[in-house]
Image 1 (cartoon, rainbow over the protein chains, first blue to last red):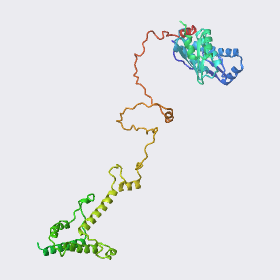
Image 2: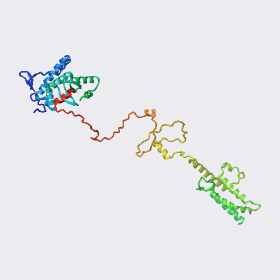
Image 3: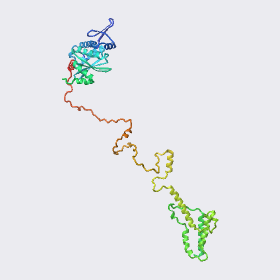
Image 4: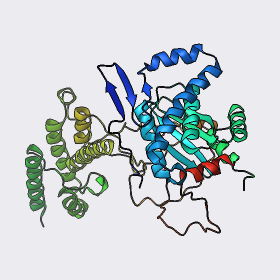
Length: 182
Length: 235
């Protein structure tokens, strides 16, 4: 039975004689990179490169969370969010939680060091890697502390971006997204 | 009564008049406002008693004129000034002492009445001519609480009257009904700047029967994260 809480024991292993850092589960070697270095990279890199970087970061988080859940398809909301949020916290992405706005899934990230575009691609890839579904993420809002990201189809994401660009509030855009839906 | 007795009686009367005229005169206790009621003290009735005696006098000697002469001499020596006495008794008309006394008393009473009349306020005036001395001293010492109203004020000018001062609503029993006055622009400007709103809020008791649910607000309740993800992806 999968525990609904995240177990952080030995989530990261530091091999000081070899000078390596590895994560538990996939035994991948990781690198402690300053967040400011990532910011400089995102600002100077092409959008495609940022998307590639973000998806790589998110995929690793999603795979480790899926490994912890065993059967992510049957995992409850609480379990799924606990494991995915735990892995995101170990990676230093921020504190993850979800909000359900009707039928829409919104991921909330608090105190993330990643810039918006990199964060969106990271979370989209993490959800895809953990759930096995193709998903598109859209940044709804962000302030100094909290970022909200809508998880939806590519078509729905395009509509929401258009509404927000036209001046519609993000919460109204989410509500409008349900108009005409079954 | 014989003539000698009459003369003796008259001389006694004259002596008594002299005695009375030389001494201090008693003040009449009657009201100075009624000087007409002053009666001659004793001379008049006794002179009246002399009248029938005069009818009995003889052709040679006139005792009445003698009595008058004696009385006039005494009155002249006592009442007339020094210059007047130098003219001699022939130039002085016969003076009745009783008339002198009555006239003097009437004059004194008239002077006293005039003094009191001057101090009194006229009956037709409702305002006092002068404030009471104690009130006057208190006003000088501590100041008057209200400005003294002039005794004679000009009549009010015609035209619009100045606005009355604001009513004080300190009396809890103030229940008078007033008609609303139109809000003129200058009255709006006269309103104080720092007006704080006085909020009146209704009391709302909590109740769970306010809304009527005709359908379920949200049937969607996913059990798994993937189910929620699928629902969100289907939007």
